[in-house]
Image (cartoon, rainbow, N blue to C red; front, side, top):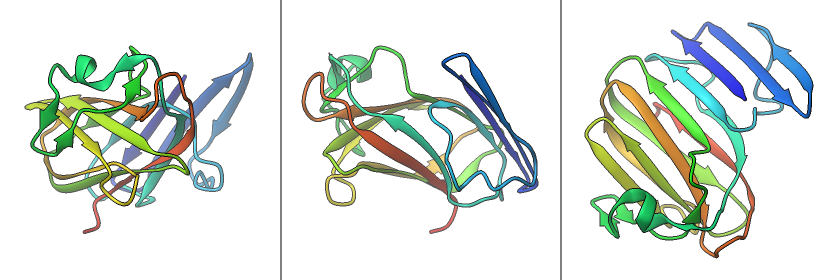
Length: 164
């Protein structure tokens, strides 16, 4: 499990526990050389680095529309297949007038975000990569990154940015 905290662009604490090994990135360490895998992210406005990047593996066996509770949202279709649990939890401590989440993967991926005010889905925001842009309320958001094909798992990076 990972825990990432970004406050006013100056603090970063991260703990990764993988296969019984523990790694800690201390404040001032260059976390962007090797983005963390999965985990919980907490950010305030004007976080740093921007964009902030985390990694994961897309896919699962549950249809995206089942997790989202619908087939379509204003941000796009709830397609693809995901795991039952989200790959990331994003805690926004403030309201963001603009925030963009963008997945980058060599394969076709999808995204579902559940949080304050509703559920949002996307597929093919930039090419075959999903993304969601807009105004975000403070609170906790669950993020699933899916694969277009059932039981296919692909590496991805999730970028979070305040920059338009």
